[in-house]
Image (cartoon, rainbow, N blue to C red; front, side):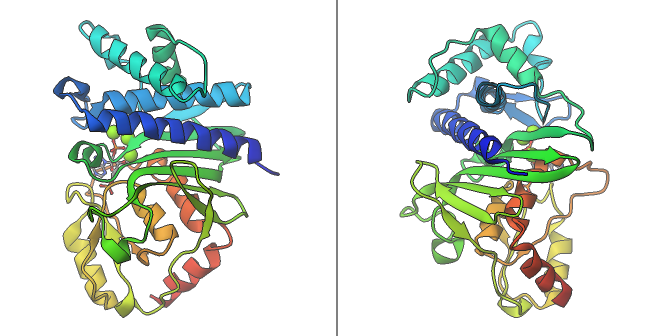
Amino acid sequence: MSYHKELAAAKKAASLAARLCQNVQKALLQSDVQSKTDKTPVTVADYGSQALVSFVLQQELRAEFSLVAEEDSKDLRKDGAQEIVERITKLVNYSLTSDGSYNVTLSTEDVLKAIDSGRSEGGSQGQHWVLDPIDGTKGFLRGDQYAIALALLDGGKVVLGVLACPNLPLTSLKDAGQHSPNNEVGCLFFAEVGGGTYMQPLDGSSAVKVQVSAVENPEEASFFESYEAAHSMHDLTSLIAQKLGVKAPPVRIDSQAKYGALSRGDGAIYLRFPHKGYREKIWDHAAGCIVVTGMDQFHSIIGFLSKC
Ligand SMILES: Nc1ncnc2c1ncn2[C@@H]1O[C@H](COP(=O)(O)O)[C@@H](O)[C@H]1OP(=O)(O)O
Ligand SMILES: [Mg+2]
Ligand SMILES: [Mg+2]
Ligand SMILES: [Mg+2]
């Protein structure tokens, strides 16, 4: 089965959401950041990105669809949230219309409903979209890496994935690192089951096929891990790397941008071990997983792991 139409819709949705996030990151206001009940941060860009992706998928696919996504409108419907909802609505409308993609004006209620269409429970039957509207909100707030991560499940398997990484350099992190002022940034990774993985600049120029690292000797390999020690045990990863014989220092980056960088061979190993009690969510890995395993790359990864 081919998922070309779904992939085109997902790329359009993630690219427009990336533009929304870039606009917010340029001028982040204190009032744009809220704290959720689990004490993690959420911004107008997380909500805006979710509303926008949900709207674009609905427009492009014109069918009933199920979306499992991180955010919901509960806090936005509380007293005192009207101003922030209006700001989100303005951002969504601007991002949908400024380059002529759509000719619409959504109301605040349309935006809240679009956010809430992400409340599906998912499951192993039928098709479900899976969205993290901003993966790595802490990286986003720091001006570092973050990703818009969108995947499609069919019969419980990930069949396509798109990762928009607005701050990831187009060239390998091996060459200039994350923060060189000469870096041109903004990558869109995408993969469809059986079709390999591609990367293109977020500005829309042409895509290239990417491959995971061919390095087989851990001494020559470098590894990615979370930037935040609160998200992954740096002590443990350091111990594992030492046992494997890895010589290079860890490359610490936020979000599923790690999977993007891994899929094009910027490094060879991914190590992420959340602290005890943390419950993983499918939107934190679905898109990244298919981008890295992109089917024809799968065997080389398995080959590498079996040698470790
Ligand atoms: N305490 C935590 N432990 C592990 N992961 C977390 C924790 N809090 C948030 N996250 C999620 O970890 C991911 C980022 O991981 P990393 O640090 O490897 O980049 C994000 O999905 C982030 O959620 P969010 O999508 O809200 O940013
Ligand atoms: Mg979050
Ligand atoms: Mg996340
Ligand atoms: Mg998120």
